[in-house]
Length: 337
Ligand SMILES: C[S@@+](CC[C@H](N)C(=O)[O-])C[C@H]1O[C@@H](n2cnc3c(N)ncnc32)[C@H](O)[C@@H]1O
Image (tube, rainbow, N blue to C red; front, side):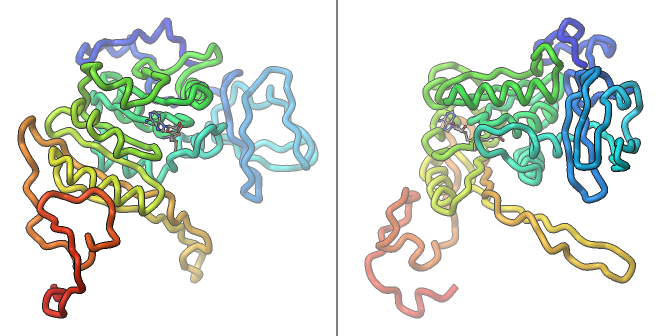
């Protein structure tokens, strides 16, 4: 388990000697024999998962009898154990993608498929300073901390104290140890991002907004982001998506926003039966990214005319510069591409 006394916090760019860094403190990955105080994941023959924190003298009970935790402690992960009534369980430490979907939640979490997209498409790199809000349950925070590595920084904002507590506990559980230590590259502020960040003088490389109204934070994001930096919003509904994208366009200090979602489908592969799985992770949320222009520089306006009716009389959102209010019905000639 991570011992903070063994893992000094380093200023950015201040490379520590290898032996100074306890890898568990930065990655959440623990190696070697299982120890008391660590979490393990038991998988039974029917695919049911059980997460347990190993405690000396404690027993795990299921409908297939019991297992003593002491039987697991001291063994290298990746083995099977048999319970008192013959149940077989596969034992591993949980992966980050497994941990975030089973950990306690306050707010809804960013799912691993989306966290992966955020890390890749928002270009989270070792050494980056990433600001995120809201921290919610801390799921995305864990992926960001992993991606920025020992010389980076993640600064999270969460306006609800009770959610901040959940995030603190989850991050500490994944990266830290039983004494409640958390990740040394992480700072969590309880408060509203727009209020806390304004005038703070903080600069960052990436800003991730997972909240109900990310457009309300766009001005502070623009002030904090370095030129070339990326703002990334994660929103659940099409109305949020539209409002955020149009607000970015109206702001003018960002490149044309890119919007997408990811759908992940498992495949069943067994002999000649090779087909898509029956269930898939469909819609979770939409992602939007845009890059920050240099100070005083404006993004070029889109060359293409908007689709007919896109900003018609029913549209009441932010109106990008150069887009007139459409009043009448378009002619056939106007509606052709
Ligand atoms: C969907 S949750 C975030 C989940 C989190 N990304 C995770 O993966 O666990 C949204 C959170 O944003 C917080 N929030 C909303 N607006 C905020 C703001 N302006 N500043 C800080 N936190 C905010 C909410 O309290 C809520 O906890």
